[in-house]
Image (cartoon, rainbow, N blue to C red; front, side, top):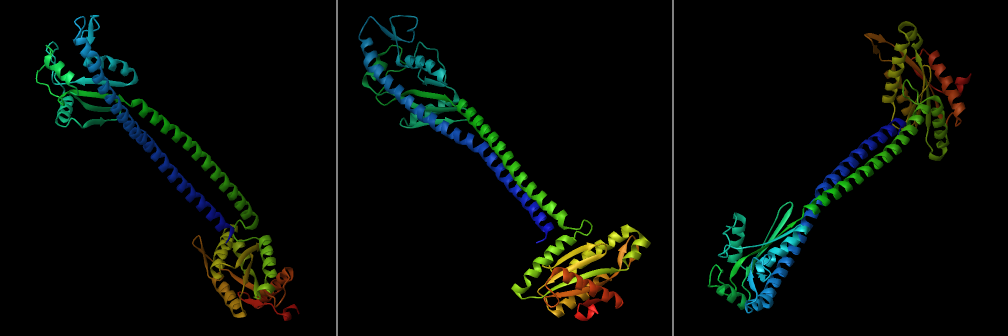
Amino acid sequence: MTTNQNYMVSQTLFRRLTIVVSVLFTLVLLGLMFYIPAKIQIYSENRAIEQGTDTLKQFSILRSYYTENVINKIISNDEFIVGHNHKNNKKTIPLPATLIKDLSEQYQNLGIEIKLYSPYQFRTKRSTPLNKIEYSIWNLLNQDPSSAYNKTNKQKVSIAIADIMTSQSCVDCHNTHSLSPKRDWNLGDVRGVLQIDIDISRQIEEAYDLSYSIVAILVVLLICVFGFIFFVFRKEEFEIMNFYKATHDPLTKLYNRSFFLESLELALNQVDRHQYKLSLSFIDLDGFKEINDKHGHDAGDQTLIEVAKRLKKCVREVDTIARLGGDEFAVLMVDLNQENISQAATRMNESISRPIAYQEKTLNVSCSIGIAIAPDNSCDNTTLMQMSDKAMYQAKMAGKNTFKIYTPDDTK
């Protein structure tokens, strides 16, 4: 693979990796921004429902206990009375419903609201009709007292259970009390709704704060990852480009002389091991000086660039092409026989000799090619270069625009 290809692969990998990392991190960030609050919302709701249900059960137990062990004793004692006005009258003991109302005020500091409501109103109490939601909850629990109602929104969880007549003493109290709204109570009757509303807005805010913190951390991590990737690939890019500049001709983008000689030496070291033939073609352009003199150096540069492109099309991917300097090129081809070498030289002659279009002008150039073969001629890189150079001069003496394969007779 050529250095330029290595550079392109490096750039492609960098871009692809950058895109993949960006997409993955974006999906993770978006996912966490929605996932964390959603999970905490669900957890907070479930926790509030569990907490609210337990609290309501405790209040039901407390109300039953209070009725049995306090209210019944107070009723039998003429010194005290039971009512709602206990805060203004020292001899008044709060009713269970009033007690629940008083306790609910203490819970409000915790973001919890407890309320007891019923369509049945005490006679001395101003009638307060239930709102639409309360009335629907009442109907639901009145039809099925064993059920429980719960509803959640983004910031509040509401749980409600039926307030049921659970003891005979409570039934007797309601049936005999002068202020009771009716006198036909029975065990199991639903007298109201015990509801608790729990504020979970603080947990949700904390969830968003947590998600934002995690996103911020991941963004910093993403920047660090990108910085590391950028550093690694830029370092590799600089190394590749420095190597490219050191081994390539800046005009034609072919290999330069120094790299070509190193490649030739390495290839010659493999000749005996792999038992193949290696051909070194030394190419010199015919008529190049006239193009420079007549049309200028820009035309000469364009001619060299076009020749380089045509040479690339005449050889295989594994072959090595170099510009040795001026209008001299070299081609190193491996694993060929004599017929393949001649066919390749013919292709190069025919391709280069085609007219070159330049600024509405036609440039004509051809080439003389000298070929030395290893191991037939030599396995020494310097000697092989000299032999191909001599063969090239033989091609020029033979009329140019042709090729010659070095033979010992050429030295005479």
